[in-house]
Every structure is written in structure tokens, then in C-alpha cells.
Length: 270
Image (cartoon, rainbow, N blue to C red; front, top):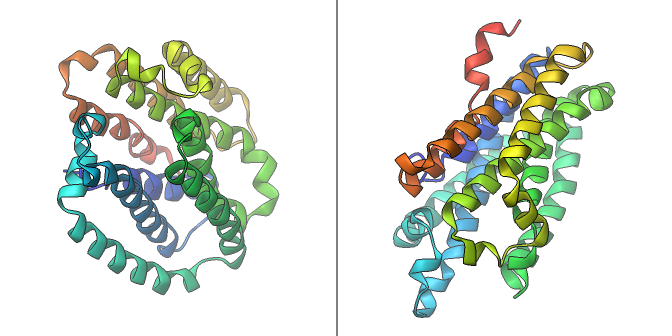
């Protein structure tokens, strides 16, 4: 249910927003991770409702194109729409409590994200776009904005960690895509996505090694952030190794569960 209710991504987003700030010795107000969770939940719920629109066409084979999360959102679309409206009201009430510089950066990202949504859901060529890579970039940027907005001088210092986290989020999406699609459907993906899917294990190992090296060797960087990325990449590799023992829905939920590695490193925060 954590996955079907679209609560997995908001949990990951809120946790990493808080964890990054703590690792950089910055105290964020509670409003920051709460606003992050609300905004991400609304985006993911909207994305899944939009994906499920094919069910309204009653086209043959429409159900086979979707996953359990899409069917669940379509079945309970009225409840999700009502929940999104309430979340929107709560988000509007919280936004004035956020840092003004963070709001400026979020407005820029919001415009880019809206443009991406339009291209993704309103064009016939959407399947040729590297959706997984874009998700990693947008997700990572949103999580790093609250910390960067409060300490602009940290931008270059945490840039390698931000790039690693974006790569990790993209890797998470690529593993999920590979697990949920057979070879024929996967061939419809963007060429960049196809190449990455053919080398998932190597990509995961590269991210884990790079993150571990950054955690050990790069003293100016907050070490716990790349350490959490390295652990998550290893967990995704383990999930891929034993993917045959889980249903596709459980595997999808476990992929996001693997991104909750900051919980394991919480005792090391100072």
C-alpha cells in the first residue's frame, strides 16, 4: 500500500531533504521536508493518473500496458483527486514558511517540470524520451535546493554528491523499467535508456564505487551523503539479483525502499 498510494517517492524525498541538510550541518524548518513530501506526492499521483488515461479509451490491451499502481490510481481516481486538492491547499499554506531563495529556485524548476510534463503526456513521441534520466535530475535538484538556498557557498562543495544522487535516482528508475518490461517493450524506449538497461549492473557498480570513493577521499564533502548513495546502489544490485523471488509490485516498492539508506546512517549524524 505504501507503493500503491504513491507514498514511496514522497517518503524518499522528505527523508533525503532532511538528511542532506543534517549532513551539511544545516537546520531546516519542518516545513521544508513536509512541503517536499506534499509536492512530490501530488506530482507522482498526477503522473500515474495521466498514465492511466488509456483505460478510458477502452482500447484493447490498454490494461496490459499499465502496472498495478496505475490501475489502483484509476480505480480510486476520485479519492486521489480529492487528496491532491487537500494536499495543494496544505502546500499553499506551508510555502510562505520556506526560504525565499529556495522558492525562487523551485519556481525555475517548476516551469521546467511543467514543460517536461506537457511533452511527456501530450505528445506521441513521449516513449522516445529518456524519462528515467529526467526523473533523476529533477528529483535530485528538488532535494538539494533547500540546503543550497540556505548556504549558497556550498554549491560546488556538494555538486559531486548531487550528481551521484541524480545518477542513483535514474538508476532506480532504470531498474524498475527493466523489471516491468519485457525485451520487446523495452526496445521502444529512448536509445539512451536502452543502452543503460543493457549495462545496469555495471552502472550500479560504477555509482557504488564512485560514491564510496567520494565518501572516503573527498574531505570537504559531507561524507554521509555519498555513503548513503553507495549503500543504496548496492541494495539495488541485490534486489536485481533476487528479483525472481518478488512480484513486480513488491519489487517496485522494494526499489524505493532501497533509497531509504539515510535511516541506516542516522546514528552517524553529528
